[in-house]
Amino acid sequence: MQTTEAMHSPLTCYPMRFEPGADLKEGLIRFVEDNKLSAAFILTCVGSVTKATLRMADSKTIKTYDGPFEIVSLVGTLSGGGHLHISLSDSEGNVFGGHVISDVTVYTTAEIVIGNCSAAVMSRETDKRTGYKELAVYQRPA
Image (cartoon, rainbow, N blue to C red; front, side, top):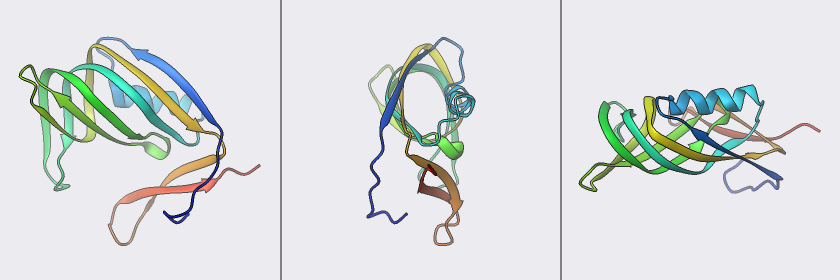
């Protein structure tokens, strides 16, 4: 699918809460796989974490942060292995973020709503231009 094309798809929403100690990325990917969601993404997320391992914008630097931190934003796709970005704030209100690698551990709560476009299928395919596995969207077979 070209980026200029759009696809109409019904939306189903899945509200949920992750409890203290849960691994956010692992839990989200497991939920999507267990429920066979073909085109899942994050609609909203609020909560807090004690730890997060993130890749920075240079695509090479990986940093692990120990909190607690507030989740200011969590966005991304979940189907096809996931691609998540998070913004966190510290006790002074300083905000930082990056590409979620692992170890995003819930502190008090993570209240999340996942959306799924039931007429679509998302996968990740290597893009020769970037060298990365990038999002590919297809019409779900009838």
